[in-house]
Image 1 (cartoon, rainbow, N blue to C red):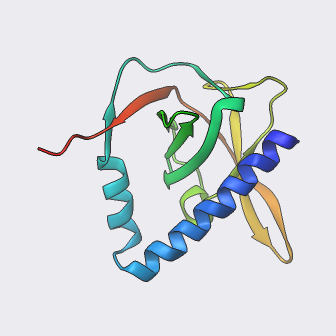
Image 2: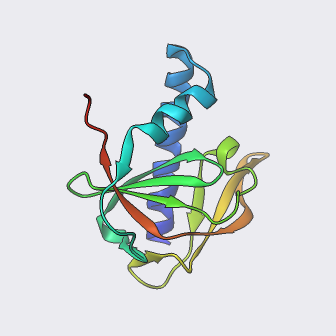
Length: 137
């Protein structure tokens, strides 16, 4: 439950970031394209990441989530299939009894209904691709 709350808090921060980006201009699709292009693969994908090391998560689009760990390392998870409402809701939860989030796990989109959040579509994760910032040329 504690880990789920951490991701919920991260999602709320991510929503605030999107609201401020909307104020600064540019369409959502342009901002997502920039976010995807800002990083490039840096090594072989891994099956799991350690949850206690995750500091934030950022939904890029309906199939892509970037997880930032302690020390600033970014792991990009590209879901095998598009996840309904993930891009528009920009938040998700997960349930695991381990201190790892793995490619065999499922996330649930958190949707606003009335005065609360409810779990929506369940979507399987892919492997976690280590990423590095693209170096400007």
